[in-house]
Each structure stands twice: as C-alpha cells, then as structure tokens.
Length: 158
Image (cartoon, rainbow, N blue to C red; front, top):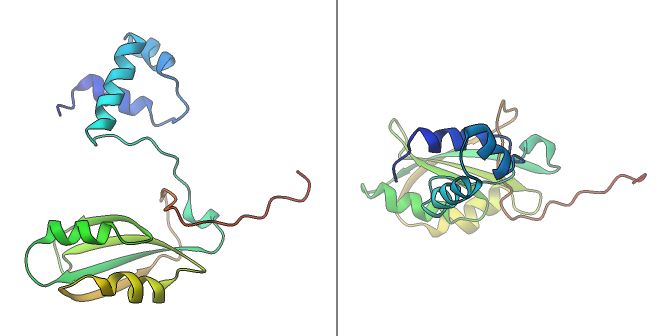
C-alpha cells in the first residue's frame, strides 16, 4: 500500500486515539467518508493498528522481558512468526547483530519466566540459545495488553 502525505497526516492525527473522524476530516479539509475509508484500508492492510497502550510499570504484578534469540538455520522470518504466537509475546523483530530475533514479552505472577521458557519457548525447534533481559525501568514504553488477565482491585471509595 502506498503511504502518501494524506495517509501520514491521518496517522499523525490518530496519535490522540480519541480524535473523531469528523474532527480529523475538518482539520485536513477532507470528507469524513474519505478519512473513514482510508483508515479502514490502512487497518485492513495491516499498515495501521488502533489500540490502547499502557505503561507496563502501571500494571500490578506484570514484567516486561526482552529475549535475544539465536536460531539454527536462516529461515528467520518463519522463526519470528513462531515466536510471535507464543503466550505473553508482544512483539518479535528479526535483527542484525549477535542475535537473530529480539522478542518482547509481558509476563505476570501466574505466568513468569519459568513458564515462558519451559511451556512456550521449549516448544520451538532449532533454537540455539537465548539471552533474557528483564526490564526494570523503561522510558516511553507503552505496550498492548496481551490478553492475560490483570487483576486490579478497585478503589474503596468508588
């Protein structure tokens, strides 16, 4: 898909996820239907995803890890796809350098490092080695919730 100047302007306006199509259209001098159809096409083609992101440090009992992975063989895209389907995984990147893949995952109290490696990573063939990096503090990191239940106790006064 061609990412033209209008698409870039639309995406920039979506940084505020609450912006209405009507307001975006008014600001860009486009018809609301044009905005709606272009955004639909961008999302349908996988160029754009609109979702709520959260600072992982604000989630109780959640932990972000990054895992450098070395694989046997050179089918890195296939291995990346396999890792992307593992429970807890937020993203997988094929990279240059000492690792073949960088995997980012969010783990919790009931699904931690041990479970991630013994139940998930162990099921993938031809992994030469992994190196885990636990994120203690992040800056500007926002992540989607991975579908794991996050139990939050509501405030007592409402």
